[in-house]
Length: 258
Image (cartoon, rainbow, N blue to C red; front, side):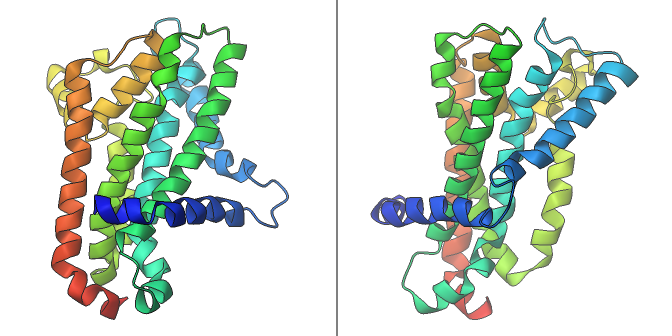
């Protein structure tokens, strides 16, 4: 799989960028639509958790920065998964006619999600600076866990995209899974207030080491521990291996059913 991705790297990048451009072609607000949905959700959650409920303890970090530091990566991960699950169906015409490896189409969706995430996190950095957050050299390491998180979405996307071609309900069921997964990481709340058993459960969320690393770098100037690095690499390798195994098992029938 890695060989095919490297061989088609130019095509993946060009189509990923083109997908981002064409997605907003003819739109008056352009790229702003990419941040409008998470922006609305962020505003709603910020109002609820700062006025209706007691404000979570965020170690003197402005709550909106605390919230966005994990919510933006989670949103990009969810987008990567959703688009990956639909990639084979959406590109059925190309798959039937061109001898392009299937995983290339998931990769181009992942590239688009990574571009969106880069834009959104760049805006968050500007907001953080306006809110008087002190920049540190640790911010330079942020692209690593952010990219690994999208790589995790790519691995799962290959498997989900393959299964979804045969069982279309997978694509419809995925948003419900993402909604549940959203609350199984402390994006909007302080994990210290959870019961001990729940503090263990949230560590089982596949995105846990990624979001912990991102928040540690961005909010607390902390380099991820070896355990977090190991967790990120292990999850990326496992998701890609499982996704490729599913694709390889069903590849012979895939182009006939889409």
